[in-house]
Length: 267
Length: 240
Ligand SMILES: Nc1ncnc2c1ncn2[C@@H]1O[C@H](COP(=O)(O)OP(=O)(O)OP(=O)(O)O)[C@@H](O)[C@H]1O
Ligand SMILES: [Mg+2]
Image 1 (tube, each protein chain N blue to C red):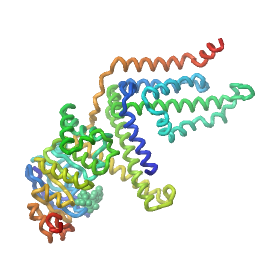
Image 2 (tube, rainbow over the protein chains, first blue to last red):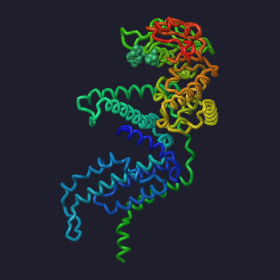
Image 3 (tube, rainbow over the protein chains, first blue to last red):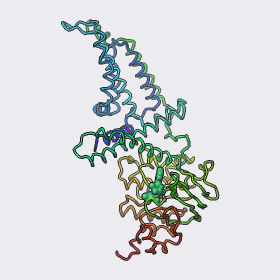
Image 4 (cartoon, rainbow over the protein chains, first blue to last red):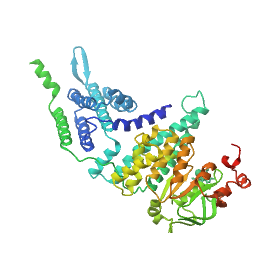
């Protein structure tokens, strides 16, 4: 398998993770979506120096990993490409913000370092939360949930088709890189002189395929309306899940758990 | 049921692919469309489905294939694409199979029944919940045929249904096609399959219809076939 095929394989593996069964998988997609959005909003809203307040937010994804049976390793493995990008965002903070905010023995910690760590942790938490949502909820159920909330049909269909289209494009890329390497043995990557035609071909080919796929949808009676698998009605446990998780996030946000614990221990 | 009247078509100006094509297919007929690579077989199918538009008139059940009539036309026709990768777009075989029937307003239960019946008939029950990207090319082809049969169209168009199939699956497809009572239009380079499944053959060459007649007759005509870059079907060549 070349790198691209692997990427494709991984992408489609999300469908398989999502098709598993666990108490989390069985929750209503709307409840999970709501809870995830709340989690991300709360996480992002932490003050940029509030590292100790943010750390307890880790509890939530850890709990979800436990309950859903999704391996943490899979998460980090799949996120290995985006994770560094997200984490790199705060990398320059230590250079700009040198005010000392904390003295640990002889070690002086600047505001920049704290805010960098906070930003990195925020990125990590948000990514994990999104991953957990995707890994426990099939994309069409998620779309059905969005439709339930009256998100415009066009937008939802766009989301669904984009998700599928990424697969088509990586698939074409896999075929092309393989064909290229078979005729350019021992070459690492794709030679710069071939990039232009390679990219052009990729675009044309995936457009062609997308067009045929779309035609095949039309030929089977598709008409602006996707028949999502029926989602069972919102039950009490879904409401409880959403309410409990959101209250937990708010609690973690406004009650400083770390400080509280500190006080208890000191006493 | 299907009628082409003086149909011409070109993808690019000055390079006609089909020239003045006329033929008609009666309801229930099984017709093989043969011709060399690039003869225009797939193009004929795409014109019929309203995926392309050319000159001349094409009628399905008396309704002209035009932008306004697409929904009516397509409801009647089931199309197995030459490339199954482009036909299957849902994660699993099952989800792909229910796509068409649901779009046509069938209930979930009815759809489910149809899906199971088609899968059983093709011997594919095991494939139902498999992921489309994790089945072989031939299995995907069988699944693609299943998605079309699940729609129970009035006429079935198949573009190279037997390519990529092992002998056993090829035989299953042939038998399935023979059992179908619908109108059938099948393109293939597998002339033995055409002989087994079709009663009539249209031979396309250089964008024109060069022969139209009983399958037994045309597929036995060595000179005609060879003049058009084809060979006698093995079963008729007597070299088994
Ligand atoms: N999108 C396109 N743009 C331009 N020319 C095309 C396009 N698709 C097909 N053609 C040309 O039209 C002609 C007929 O193509 P078509 O696909 O109908 O052939 P076919 O009989 O199905 O061949 P095969 O047996 O290889 O499937 C070919 O010469 C081909 O090069
Ligand atoms: Mg063709």
